[in-house]
Image (cartoon, rainbow, N blue to C red; front, side, top):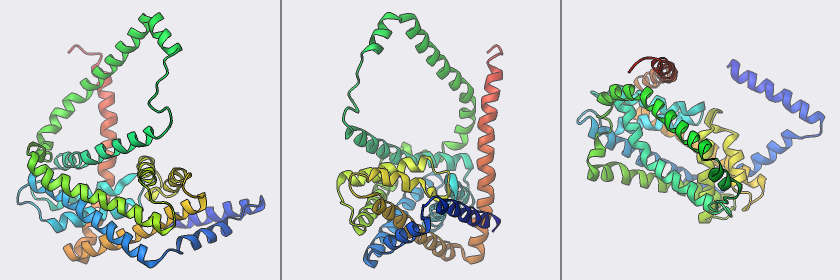
Length: 352
């Protein structure tokens, strides 16, 4: 409550200062709100349906990973509820902390699981999105004139005329890579024993495609349809390039989501991505409208799933405890990485 009050007071102070220099923030917000709420209810319903389908299919992919890793240890509905909680919390928490809450909930509901195993499952779950995200970036870069035209002028001469410097740079890079591998290799070997169960499905290609890849592809198609629906709702041209631009800008915004739910960052990136398709006011209205509607739906969907699966008391206790544990786990992992780096620096002075 104190933080909310501080944000409100801060907003009022900034608004007063801007009014003094002639910037009407309230008027702009009212105009933006009118634009956000001007879309047809049909678009809202369609967007929510596709958003729900995305959550269900992505949760099904998670279920495939955990079901294969820990046979008989879990059923679909608890996995879907835990995943939906993470999706909802990522809309209101900074730095994707909601994902950590989901992982901790998986640890609580999957019989026989370990946290390294759950993390390994998370890596498996991210493989598809890593590939599809890379393809989107490659497409966007290819649309920029000269993106893949490398001009070697003075740089080429420098390489040819200074072979010793070039060799030293390459050797230094190789040394740094070797040092990092040495620092982390021992830790990796310790974790692999516990983690390999979570990634077991990768050893069965047919099961991976059936239980993980196909649901994820369906979920991603639903995600694309959410964007298509809301672009159409705000009269923004729906083309392959405009959809790819929004997907790419959302990925970049997600990497920099320091604010709760990436608020502000998403709008800035979306506005820039849609610059050639519409004016900045419409692009901002689209981004805000889509985020507000999908956030409200994600929160409601998660609450319904948690109550239906665990009951109100059990579900709220599970989410509350998982949130507390997730913050601890995130801090521990951050500290562990720092300790590994410090330990590795000390080892470098010893005889192997």
